[in-house]
Image 1 (cartoon, rainbow, N blue to C red):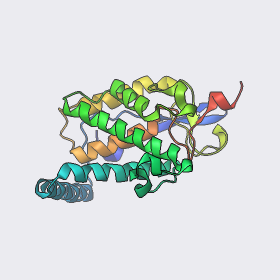
Image 2: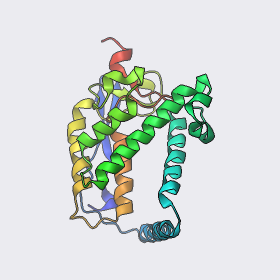
Image 3: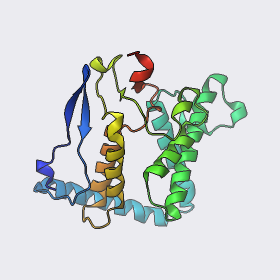
Image 4: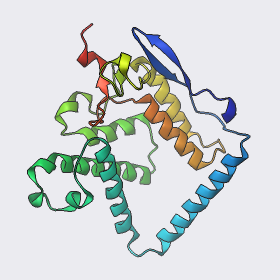
Length: 232
């Protein structure tokens, strides 16, 4: 698939709003833009230097765990948490009452991340089922999202705005998710493509965020569930 001619998707009319139908990505990717080759080369060099640094760093596992906790704290803040990294690291008994919920969510982030890492280390493939298991760990204990634990959504959600008509983005209807995630899974497992890993990872990240296969998880800009907010 030539990158310059690829269409990321199309809009369809659903009732009084437009939802985005995403295109598949399981292709052999090529492009003409020489600038992209330069960027991939520079990024790959940076990754190589980081890998070399990891081999020279004593107790690198401890360093990686701290990096994970830093990233988890940032992700948690996107969802409305107000704990600092230092607060995430202190003992539970020294945590302020108003910060305990955010800290518990950070712990679930860490547990979910470790679960994913261990599965990959054991040679398990990244599949839809694994993503559901990770989501279940991530959201377990969240009273607002119990109904959605480890499940792809079965209704329309939207991001931003108070109604679908005013939303900033409306993901594909839930009926499209099986096909979208099947293509997503095939692209992960496709070892015949010569697409650089960094490009592949970037495309998978974009694809997953655009599909928005889960309802729960975003507290700051809550992914609203159309069926729970409106009665047809």
